[in-house]
Length: 369
Image (cartoon, rainbow, N blue to C red; front, side):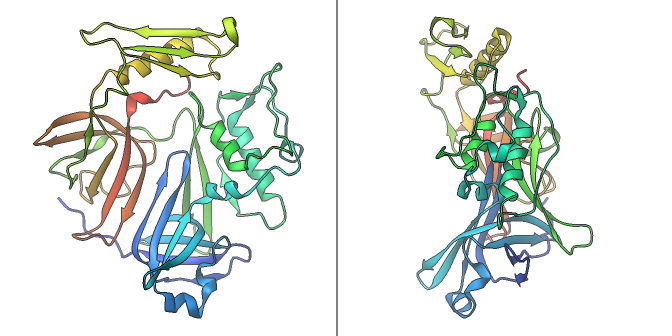
């Protein structure tokens, strides 16, 4: 059953430094927005050029916060990065809070003296990056980073983790490195009104050993809430019954574990380098999990949903595992898929739609398990 449409979306903009509200009802058409796992997520839309010509500060690129409110709740927030002509209209592009770190560098070294790091919690280093970025004049977005702690470590006595002032990698790349490996924290960007709706709370949600949860109360299903036949990919490039995982160390001292089975198919192998793994038990677990998902031919990386009671918009979160059922004339697919992001299209023909990106849940390990 379709869920009644929420209160129409409202787009607001705010000066990034002064906090002054520039527009509380920016007329954006073809609006699309949503979050990502370990990324900022994005917003796109169109604005009439006459409006911006009369007041270009309403969406000044690199200096404007933009928010989407739906049903009285802010559901997305970020920074306007690009406004340009598109025929008779202006197109607008924005990305959420972590995109700001792509435009910032460690000019002082060691994140202003907070490093170097030995056996440091990756979550602590991420907080230090944000504290450094927001402690510089005109650099404070008032983003709050979760106090989450983890057992994911960076730096050893023989390989101390440094951030040098001469490093050309931006702060965003450094955070990406801290969440990119096996058994590292997750993050996503969220935005909400404060309690009395006088200000906006900008937040980096950190998850350990993961963001999201395995959901048994909702599902994505053909004929129920999936409104287009998604592509079910069957790729021999991804298939393997033999997985070789290399871990910490160099040369002949480099750790390695192999997970292999025979199953009546041509032998296919794949190799993964995971230098952050420093134990054979962790390497073996990673190899077994990697082989398990690579032995399954067929995956779904995208579904388009309508708003129904089986999975109402807002009921799933970044990182959730959702049981997904695809049935069409080409075959069937059932399995657990992890939500890695989505884009809401509130004015889509036929009613609001959400384009959800998915990965096989078995691709992920949590906390090194």
